[in-house]
Length: 170
Image (cartoon, rainbow, N blue to C red; front, top):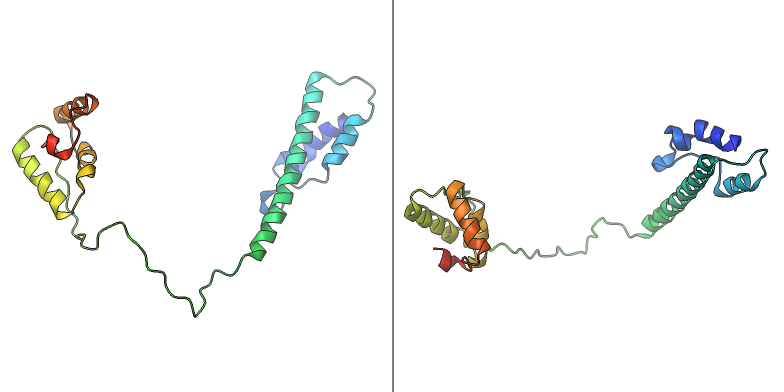
């Protein structure tokens, strides 16, 4: 058991030393740990020593698995075709969910706190028309731009199923 405790004390596996890819450098293998665990010792192991041995065994096993997976990953990367475009490749046209007639001017959405509701409804409708905002998105968008009493009212209406569409809102 002393060999394991010395390993824990001085091994780069537990002292922060690492090799390539930040993998622990460990001269001790899983098989060596199992062999150490199977060797008879002069005294019986305490539950803590047994737990340390089991954890150390599992950690070394995990390190070996990670190292094996890293090697396999490197092999897969070598098999991948080059990502540089070939001269004969055609550019793929992108399909954008944003309409091509979308306006480029950034307009601020007016905030609403409950004062001047007719003016705010006019402004928000103008905003939605300018940006061709679909009706099904409008209620969600306006909820982000309400403050104070107006927000409390909106939350109550939405929670109680009173706001089902944009036309019912305005």
